[in-house]
Length: 333
Ligand SMILES: NC(=O)c1ccc[n+]([C@@H]2O[C@H](COP(=O)([O-])OP(=O)(O)OC[C@H]3O[C@@H](n4cnc5c(N)ncnc54)[C@H](OP(=O)(O)O)[C@@H]3O)[C@@H](O)[C@H]2O)c1
Image 1 (spheres, rainbow, N blue to C red):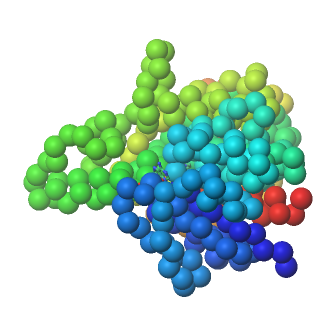
Image 2: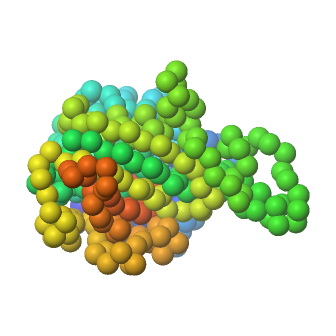
């Protein structure tokens, strides 16, 4: 079997760690492995029982690979990915930098895997929040169309990286001892025993960066500029697993029984038909390969509208797993 030399830029981070674990678990045909971090601190990562020291990336070092996973920052992706892609190195980028770029496919394999082509060397993975919705709604959208989508999100702190996970743990410990940490760190408000409707900065209309990403990226993945999408993103004190409450208006009439059949057959989705079997981040958002949904019901606001509760692992399907699935599909092309 052909093997591929792989580089992971951001190997010491939250997504990088999961990505290495998934390459191993899913037996991706890795030849040589190169691990990179910022170079600002010493870090080693483990892959197939062997330790790899991370170092700062350079174009020459990255060019030795057949495939580079970018799981670091927008700036790092911008600096290296287009040049590497032009030199024939496949680049899968989990940062936001190229998601809306015209010639860069934004891919969730179960939803729009057909966008992957041998000629497209730079591929983006979407924001971790919308992935659950895109996977869960794929079959229903194909059959009934989606006219309007409203989402309220309940986002885990790991969506903001390693520093954010540590911040929640520190705040929780301090709160339980009756102390409060000085403000600062990765969040705009205290997160322990709290939540806040802000993920990213605000634009002139008062929408957060995350809300804008979900809307724009879903429209690109669905190749549908006309669909109307409204989002409120909330950060909650959950370590891992994003949850979404969705209100969906369809273009064509549906029955609940027919929707249930579509959800039961949706690739990458486990659908709970009974109301009391709903998924939660603790049970279904921790190293899970699929998306979970439940609490399907008619909305009271419109006869064309239904409600759904969705949970997925932001670090797996929302990031590392999606990237590995893209790579698995690329090597088959
Ligand atoms: N977390 C999620 O749920 C999620 C979901 C979808 C997409 N993403 C995206 O995935 C990327 C990584 O997120 P994360 O949550 O894993 O963040 P993280 O835990 O903060 O890790 C960031 C990684 O990037 C490395 N890095 C930082 N600056 C670098 C530089 N100049 N050169 C090389 N490496 C550098 C860090 O190395 P050091 O340790 O040396 O700083 C670390 O390995 C981000 O673009 C994020 O938007 C994250």
